[in-house]
Image 1 (cartoon, helix red, strand yellow):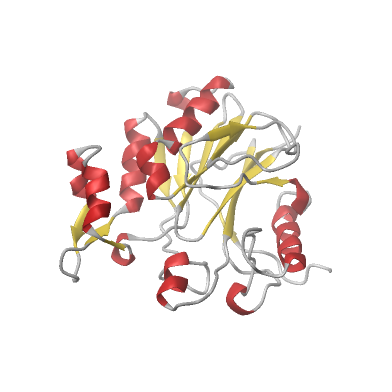
Image 2 (spheres, rainbow, N blue to C red):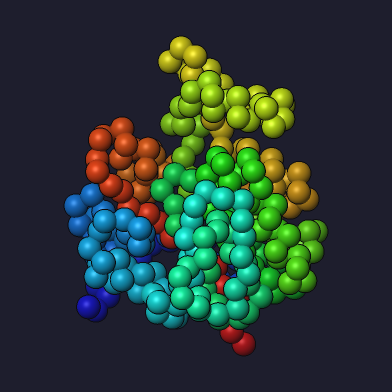
Length: 261
């Protein structure tokens, strides 16, 4: 199918340079219909697989490659990160961070409210991507992705990171057990919650929690500042779909690669 509409994506100057190419894709520019309208990249969704393949090809075309070359792990809300230097050998690894130092290898994560973080050390030519829901962010996926990058020669002082589109605090209501999971790890994490209009509930600031963890790890970090829940025209949202009692939802892609010489 010829490309008649180009996928739309956002970039950020903190990780964009002549060596590294990256994109935080929106849902615009794809062929999926219905609940998945647009550029649904999620192979785990119940969308038409031919449409997903076409959408992945469209996204990959922004990097000058094909959809089959987009390496996204089998995300399981874990703290685990993997290192890759080429296409997966068989089944996708179950992990939520992915790292490479190989030029031309396109790595990424898919999200629908969770935080997509892209990492770059332009001096060492090492890049990474992480899928950070609350579990991953709390239990170490960011730090483990950084450790994997360091094993390839990256240095903390040179790594930059950007948090892409994810759910904002004003739309992330949680119960008391959620707050307890955070404060049992570190009491000061109470500061990332504010009272909700619902008695006993709170609103979680995932943006600033992820930034806090990155900055504590010694990383310069920023955000694109987009809320997936609030901006239906541009982003898929698991929570929005859940509130509407929809049976499924799409996923957007965040991807990064080292330019080939």
